[in-house]
Image (tube, rainbow, N blue to C red; front, top):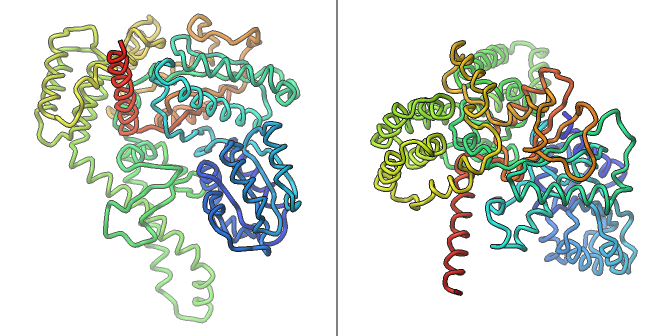
Length: 572
């Protein structure tokens, strides 16, 4: 519960001490940080009668002096300018300013100068500058997520903003946890190195006093790694509940938008999938698709029993009991229909896109050897009319990542076939992926075929048989966590920043993935934490990916790289 709890605690403290009717004013980022951990009904209980965006507040002139304004915003220069304007014409009775990260001295001076009417009651820093979707998984929801693939010379200012935002997010997380970590990074990634060094500079030089917490037995570890070390995980179809919903329908800040399905009642067009608010989801989020179907059937049967007993109203006491239980009954009904709708919709998509067939080949490409058989399987699926364009592209990408150095002629044949079958994909996207995340660029043993230990492990897994052919893949992150647990993470591959080294085994590890995480990886972290190894892992990233988002980032990075090349060519 660690991340969700820390953000909720900040919001509770913000709203609890200010009595009376309130308006909560957020910005485009903090609205996600708040809404994912706090429901509207909980805000109402804290006497928040209005939630507004800082942009729309700037436009309106209407006076609301009966309300107390609670601002919770990021300390960006744009937000400070908007506040400056709003404080010079105050519309609310009181202004309480909470910032989600560190304020600069200059910003504090600007606010003090702007507060001519003495409307500001307090200014505080509450470090909830990240979106805590799950207990051990957070994201920064960065819109320009593709920038990690762009060389610094192409867009230096863009990459600087990207880096600054990541450093802010990581700093806020450690301030919320009240820890200062030892920092390591993936040697092959320039972006990871840059972020690790800038984070260290902030924590050990610029703000050393702020991060000087009580020394614990062992410092936590912050490990900054790069998505391109494991490009396979975000390309795979998913078969466990949370990951599958994100892959097939889309999950944004724990909300699923179902408007595209049509003919759904209004209250079901956007549904919340949160392990904090939904007991069924909490116990099934990491289960595989087959088991979820069975568990939903059980839930429907339980609900029918309740519905049947509610029909049997004969006395005044029965009626009173029905009225008392009605809110609970209504909630149960909504929950049942939500999960039934989601699973029904996903079943349709699995059938329409022949995903069981596609996924079997994907898993073989990710987990098992055999180039000849793989080539044949991918060729057959490219020829299959039922296979969608995006699935064809993903299959060729997985094949190319796996067999990049074997039989270049056959690889070329697959490129050509993909181009003729799925013309909407720009030629060269698969080659661009190899340039970004091919075997030359990767640190870890992605396919378990470099390191003798991994080869032996894969053989043992093959002999034991896998419980489910669709979920046999394990993300590279799983191996990374195992190496940390055993104290075997190599210094040459993951160097330390500065002269702060790990003494003994860390008890807390934050792994931050530049380029974004997946729900398959957050599941890996949750399962690892459940083994009670004595280490608590937290996973964070710049975005939460599904294959669509990963490919979109790749296309955008390719487009920018191309225009940078042509721009250079023109200027020479």
